[in-house]
Image (tube, rainbow, N blue to C red; front, side, top):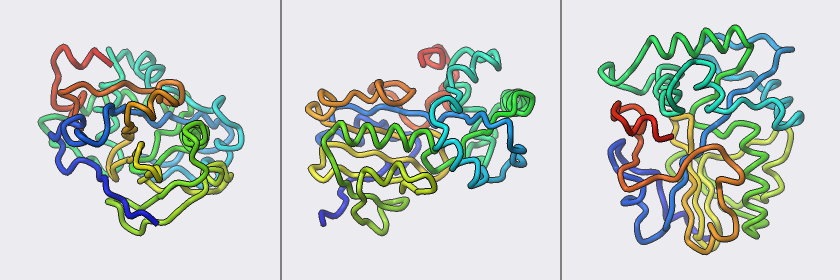
Length: 235
């Protein structure tokens, strides 16, 4: 088995394209959708989404998903970048006080409560993303991939079809065997990175599978958090 050779950027201000330069030509920032499951009580703020909800969402499919763009519209936010900032004060709350916006977070959580929407868990792929991942990896022609836990630990091979198991778990690090694609979600964030070679993206464009945007030369983990200027409205 080929050992993983790529990793998530070490620092929040490491730009994605620079970090992966020489290995990948593009980095797509993809978001974990919110989940609409009205027949289950919402989990308390800061608690993980119940396993039953994850399993049912995976069985019911995309109809249960609510995109970040829809959330931004419901909250009156200018962009999904504001959703990212609001989510940073949920879960582990990995954001310094000067960059946080507690009022946006309160507004988002209030709307989610009123509309019975589960906030995505941080550091793992949502059940709906797992469905899209199976299609994406299959389109790339990979029946098997290497997966690993956070920071590339415990690498092992996994069949792409196992991404679809109702109660299955997709580890946070995913490596194509030919090193043409790499996907990773950081332990404290609600979005993930899809890194690809030119050939890989010509076969499967992530925009056809996930909500998100392509990183530019300035994009890093502070998108919509550290830069509160005009660029916040770009996504």
